[in-house]
Amino acid sequence: MIPQLFFYVFAFLLIWFGSGMIVTSVDRLAHKLNLSSFVVSFFLLGILTSVPEISVGVNSLIDKKPEIFVGNLIGGIVVIFLLIIPLLALLGDGVKLVHQLEKDNLIFALVVIAAPSMFALDGTISLAEGLFSILLYADLVYIVEKRKGLLERIKDNLVHNKNHIVNDLIKIVLGVGTVFVASRYIVDETIYFSNLFQVSPFLISLIVVSLGTNLPELSLVIRALLLKKKEVALGDYLGSAAANTVIFGGLILANGASTVVPNHFLQTFIFIVGGLLIFYIFSRSKNDISREEGLVLLLGYLLFLFVEIF
Image (cartoon, rainbow, N blue to C red; front, side):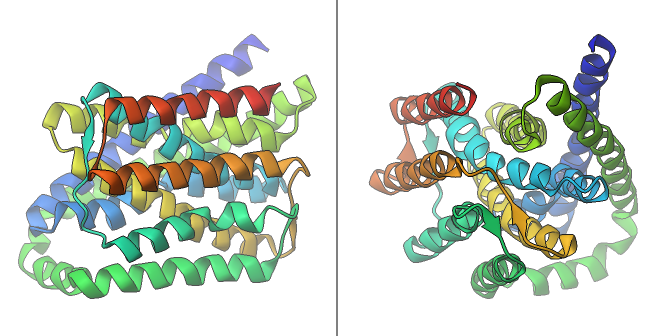
């Protein structure tokens, strides 16, 4: 078991390395293209920091263990809103929220983020619910992109900077490849440990794998604090959590059949909805999340771990 545990941890470190390569390259690319930091982090970083989730999902389908990707994607919501954002608030003496999403759009974004957990509430996720998840994300993209004109700006800037972005694109591809290989091993070892400890792959994915695949977002906490760009990190966290929904929908459709999750999922759903609701209240009260509010959210994560494990 010790060798498997060592390589399990090593695979997560590979994800950290590969994702770091992706995030750094995208950051440089965004700077070269002169794009809004919030919108770039919401869309580009949001999607690309979700490469580990995509890789784990594809590999779990190959191994015919769809509950792994469901647990990972839903657990990622808990990690982002009850662990990562609270850490940013605690370590950074609060987080000032730059609301580039209007009130109604922020509510809709949180509904999109919560959608996978709502669909899993009855224990079965249908193909129709997978398709609806994709449509929800597409609607969110339309709302934000229409206001910012992101796609048009990217197109114009690419034409004028195409000779300066090749190296960054190569590094992004290498980072994606590294993450995919590491994710393949993580899925195999998750199945191994679930059999060894007689614990469902869903539970391991919900708690352990979701933490590992959000290492890119955890690394952004450190980078955001050092560079004093906490609003960029917030854009990534919202974008990454929203991207989980479209990944969820795509993988459900790729599975080709309804996916079953454990019947105790109600407790997880309560934590997700409760965490998102508290986050919204804190974020709208004074346009920031204080250290004290961050601590409240972090205690919610510790309670979540206790309930799920025991």
